[in-house]
Image (tube, rainbow, N blue to C red):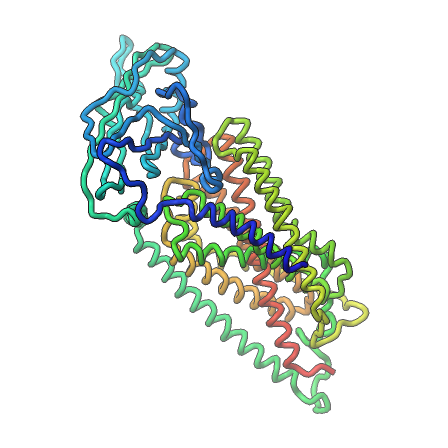
Length: 597
């Protein structure tokens, strides 16, 4: 029955997954006849520097049809903030348009002020022509000297673009590419509080291309690669790889030499003359395998970290096979939700398996906690961000039906799969067999110097992994919180592998130095050391917001720091789990090697 239930839940998610990912460009696409109308839809508008702050296109007084026809959005495009609707633009296949009026009307003073405020914030609009996204600015500002009776001073003028030029490439009866430009010669000056007579217009040109319909989205990827300077990416990743090789080799040589001396000393025959008193990490053999405090929370975080690691690997595999191409809007969000739900059993399994091994009895409570360690903070942040977006009337706010769908997926799939994973772990042989059984009474801890404290160790442990990925992190930020298109997923995968390797080696080295000081509290310390890179990611996010971007406003602030907190928390759990696993393997190995009286 459990297998049937799990299969049913997976089937639900795969249907959702397929519905979102299979929706897209087919091999041949729509076949147009000459003079047949090509669909032109308007989507949204918003400040150029605040990508999360988007509004419906007709929230500004543009020319609108008498009856709006909303586009039927799939789950992915709705998550991406798309709100497509019909427009008055009448493009006909292969029909050249020299100039055609769209509409003419008088802007009232309040409407003029709204346009001026939008131009001040560099508002960008987005449209879709045959499903291809095109963007443009609604206007521009010009500042120049103006003569007055009192002298000459600079004055800012505001101009509204009134003409759009569509340049469409076609191959046979398919639309392949669209380029949209605004004509700076056809604009109107707006003055605050003064009505303005406006006439909007458009033109269209058509040209033949040899690009096949199935490859039309590759044009966007090629344009993105030209902007991103692939050479810089490869140089940064090679530099990080060389640093990793040097770092890991250096740490490995030091640890091997130190451990060889330790093994030689600890493996001596106790009957031989010498100092019989145990020193160093051998002395704490009766405490090093003592279960950590707050066992349930610790194991739940390890289980959640294992789930996020599995999720990250799944997303990288999908990116490498080409699932996240530029035209597949919202595909990354859908994949993250679906994979997180499908991997919920991983969190339940790893959490309960470790919890029961270390003597825990309330495995069901542990399973519930493992399911909520990341999910509960996510829903809290999501609720706050979505409420703020609704308050501002932004299209970034998810519709109510989409919110209920996400809650349904969690209630029907994520939570039950976590319980099933815990039940599977509970049925296995979970006997914990440490090389050295814990003593009944814990030994007294020695005085620890300040540079071996938890906070200082976290700083050292997080800085090295972060330094290996921060260049690639900059490009990811420019894509997620900007208008770049990120397509170098192969480089991203290498950076991810380097991040895991550096985290593992640094955590093992710091764990050894900790137990060498006869401090046996390595369980939580390894998790905190490994996960400390997440703290550096959050710190870099604050730096990027204030010094590398021009984002501003309450809505963008809440979106940026709300979701960056979740990303940093996910990094903390994932890398914390990696750090714990490697520290556990290391400690078990060295204590299995020596002789314990």
